[in-house]
Length: 98
Image (cartoon, rainbow, N blue to C red):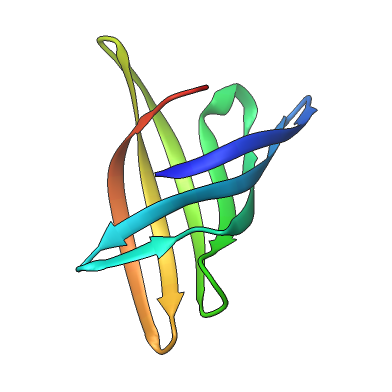
């Protein structure tokens, strides 16, 4: 889960701050500590970068697929580097607003 907070509202979209979250895969959990993102018009596309500690960095891109029933779905692509390892991850996610 990634937690994002709107920092700025513009005619062409939104600026976001990554305020936390956790990503787990391949037996390892990564706690996201900081980052930024841009969300385009209508909340359809998002790109950003974040870090999980001093040695883990990631870039990510999100796509809002829309609502199916009562749930909003999207895809989240993550390119994560940890030391000499690099992972490319694609997830189907649910989107919620607080």
